[in-house]
Length: 272
Ligand SMILES: [Mg+2]
Picture 1 (cartoon, rainbow, N blue to C red):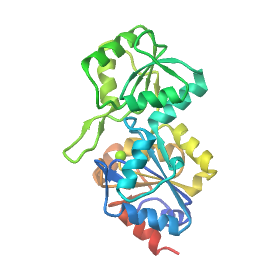
Picture 2: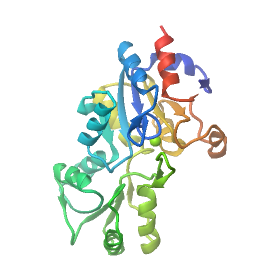
Picture 3: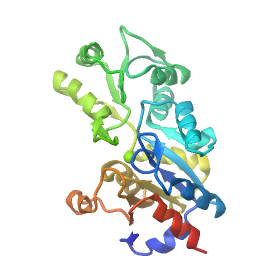
């Protein structure tokens, strides 16, 4: 591991809450990395906590819990935060129950219904674009017409692509870019990482302060930027999108760089 900022090593020892990205950090294409389970074991052995915060808006909480169980990790539902769920709750808190057109899967539509909104095909008040693996032309066309009529345009996360074993696949930001190009309108609200709001919701829920919180992720412009904006410790892992040279290229510098999650697990296991 490389400790880039002052006192990063000591700060890491004091961390009480790890906020982990999933894709490219803890797993890839639904399979854990070699050190992932060891990380979970060592964190709990040290009486620390970890939660997952993902910009993936394609899956429900249950799907995540099931996926983790298949890999041998049993979690509480409070340990997983997704941009989809947080967006639905945020829109409800801010605007109340709304008629929403969703570019997304049935899982995400259920999330919005459960949060108190009405998911509609016609006359929406809000258009929400998510990571939609069932995307088709009709959905893009409908969303574009609603956005061009001036409806509130919301995207659950800014990511352009999602890593897979074969290479990057289009994520919410790329899907939304088709609507942006078509209508000439930019999204009114971009949720998910790197907006600090989502991390503040997590820290509040766990009653943990900034200097006891650490964000771990594979992306500089979402995970690491989130941590920097929220003023918490940041660890970049090199198992996903970012390479070490990107740190200098993008000018977004984490406190620590680890080759993989297993290296962090070993550090925690060895530390007093
Ligand atoms: Mg990631």
